[in-house]
Length: 150
Length: 368
Image 1 (tube, rainbow over the protein chains, first blue to last red):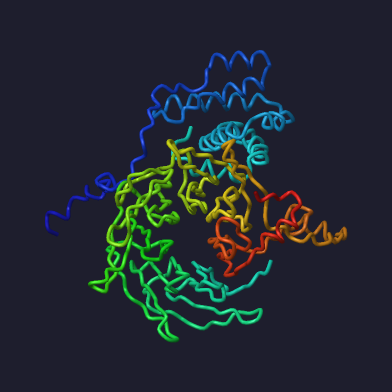
Image 2: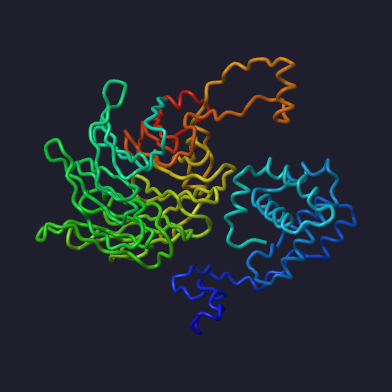
């Protein structure tokens, strides 16, 4: 074969990067987003105020930041709060949230599904059922169509 | 509400003639079929064959009785009725991707075509050359244009796009019209000027509609939201997230009420309160007749439990349309006081909805 067919490095070139018409999302300056306050949430869990902990952990979602560590930490925190609820209290907790919070909760739930751990999926599925009852399929559609997510 | 099943295939797009006796529709292929109402049925009277690709948009100009069609073959044709035959005229759109939607302007001297080439072609007829000429609106569109609607002043054009934005452009063509008067959307309107760009909703914009006065524009986007913007010094945007599947088409039926339909297969009413800046869900417009619940024998119950793991009967779609609704058109009353509107969808069926009947059937329905 001729020499220029020997190398196959060209197969690893990401041609989309060189496309001048490539769609780039708007920058939204999320560098200051730190995610929910860990100390506050931990103290609320220790006090047994789980509803308060849920409200607190759904504040300051790290949506616009590109820092993966912040996002992972936020997700871990949310998972901790969701796991500490008793099954029978989940429905009441979801009812106490407003529309935007239910959407945000659903985003965290799906993020949690992506990296399943020991018992997380079972807990998340219970929360998913209740959040679906509150937010409807529209809520899930918004998780799927969100360009910037937690 | 009369449901008429035209075909088994989806109806890609449809348009009515001026007196609503004929409907032109595309049965998901390269042709346009024109049906005429005869008694209670419809007979096919014309077949328009010219496109080489699926026809994605049809619009029928009521006064001049011309039909414009556009398709995935990157062309648009203007059809005129000569005697008993529709004769096509090719319009060169200069696009290199499929055309997606087409709309005649209110005065019918121009039409706009949205395409996958990330631009809008505004076409007008040049008398000297006896030829349709087009001008492009390119900036700042970054993806396919899915839907278009003209403002009553014949100059402003609302466009919904796959780059998640609804924009209002000026499509002022100095060769065919006078300079437009100022509107709440702005006063300087050179061709291609962006008068308004939406923000706050994510998702492709599937349907866009100006209100009758042109002061409001509504759009439905793929993240299951519907939003209304009101023109003014600073345009105010009000959006409503819904719990249903995404809506595909939206239209004003009065200055304050919208009807939208989509993947949930039923039209829904939305009410906009301009003073409070609030958009609320007004109700489902498709209320199926409650069929008597037949009791189930114990045997049936166990069979269901075995087969489907639940005791209830098969869930059947109770709405009139059995598949997504893709287009809504106003039949009577205009966008100010609509009395009848029509929906077509992917089930190949068409339903004509009567607003008065809906109002009396649903006690809580208020169309203001």
